[in-house]
Image 1: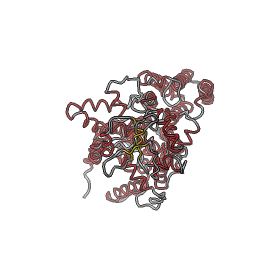
Image 2 (image 1 turned 60 degrees about the horizontal axis):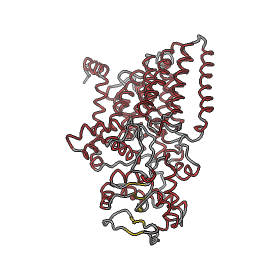
Image 3 (image 1 turned 120 degrees about the vertical axis):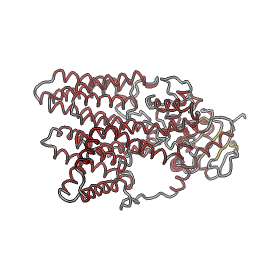
Image 4 (image 1 turned 90 degrees about the vertical axis):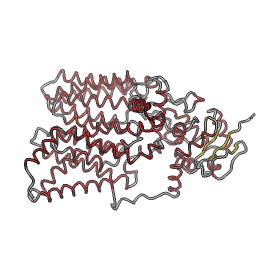
Length: 601
C-alpha cells in the first residue's frame, strides 16, 4: 500500500513546528518509565553514591534553617566543628523546592523520597532540548528523534546521571553542556554566544568538574572569530555572559568557605580568571582587526596573559586543584576509579564508552566533509573539535565519559542520517525503514556491549562477590535503621559509610570522602592501618563513642592491603582488645559494633 503523501507531509510539518512539545513529551515518557522502574529504590531512599547522600544532608540543613552561605556539615566530625563541603546551593534548590511542594500532601518523609526521585529528571528535559536543538540546526529539522533515541539507548554512562535518586550535580552540569553544544551550533551569533556563556557560568557555579569542557567551548568561539571577523557578536556576547554570569553565580551561591583563595571551586581564584577572560574577549572584539593573522596574534596574546596571570597570582593552584597532601593522594584520592584513564578500566566498561565516543567523532568528521560547501560547515567544525576534545579527555580521566557520550550524539545522528539514505537510495519504504532500524540496533549493541566478545572480559578479583554483597548490605536502609536503637552518638566507621550513616540514622560520623577534610580521612586510615594502641587516641580526638565496622566492604580491602597486621586486620580475625565492648545487634546484621572504653572510664 502506497503511503499518502499528504499525511507524510503533515507528519513532517508536525515534527518540525512542534518539536519542543514532542521533545518534552518524550522526556515525560522517559521520566515516567524511570520513576516506575525505580519506585522501590525511591521508597527505601536508596541513595547509592556518597555524594547523593551528602547532597540530601545539605538540603535537610537548609530546610532546618542553616545559613544560605553556610554549607558546613555539622553532623560529620562534630567534635572538630563539622565538615567543609565545597559545593554550592544551586543543586539544592530544586530538591528543597520539591520537598516543600509535596510535604503538605504526603508528609515530610515521603516528600523527601519523591523529591529525590523527581529532581534528577528535571535537567534531563534541558539536555534533551539542547540535543534536539543541535541536530535540528546541523543535521535536519526532522532528525531530533534520532538524537533522543541515541541518548536513551546508547549513552550508557550519561543517562544514569539523570536516574531517580541521583541528586548530585552531574545531571545539571551535563544539561549545561548540552546547551553549550546547542549554542555552538546556533547560526545566530549573539544568541549562540549568550547561551554558551551562560551555560558555562552556570556549570562552573555548580562545580569545576566540567571546567576543561567550558574552556574548550570558549577556545572554539575564539577560533571562530579568528577565522571570520563576522563572528564578532558571538564572541563579544559570550565574553560578557561568561564574566557577568560567573560574577552573579559567585555572589549568589559561593559559600563562606568558597570565598577563600581555594582552587577546587568557583572561588576568588577562578572568578578572577573568568572575569578577566571575559573582559579580554570583549576587548578583542572591540578592536576586531581586519587581518586574520592579527586576530590570531591578539587571541594568542590574550591567552598568554590569562596563563601568565594565573601562574603569577595563583601559584598554589598549579598542582592538584584539591590541594591534598601526597599521603592523602596516594592513600585515597588516587584510588578513586573515575579519576583513572579509560585504558585502566575493564574492557566491558571502557570499550562501549570508547565506541560511542569514536562513532560520534567519525560522524562529526563525516558531517564536516558533507557540509564543506554549506553554511553548516563552521558549526560542524566546532562540534567536531568539541567531540574530539571530549574523546581525548577519556585518556585523562574516565569521569569524562558521560560528557563524551553526550557530545557524541550529534555526530552519531549525522552518521545515521547521512549513511542510511546512501545505502537505500532506491527501494520500497519497508527496506529503508529496516535499514534505519538496523543502524540503530548496531549502534545500541556496540554502545552497551550486550553479548559482545568484550562483555565478560573483566577478571573478577578473589572475594569480589563478597565485597559487592557487603557494599549493598551495609548501606541498606533497613539495616542502618537498626542502629537507631542505640542513643545518638558519634560513630568511628569507614569513610565511605559516613555519609550514608548520617542520612539514615541519628548518629554522627567522623569522616566522609571529601578532600577538604583530608585530615579526618587520614585519621580513619591511620586508625585502621596502625596498631591497636594507636586507635584510641585518634578516636578520642574525634570524641567517638562507638566503633562501627562493615566487614568486607570495599574500603576495608585497602586497609588490609596497606597493613595486613594492622588494627582492622586484627579485628577481622577476631583479635579484639578488652577496651572494646561488643554491642548486640539483630540477627543477620552485616555490622560489628563496639562501645569504646577510654582510659579512666
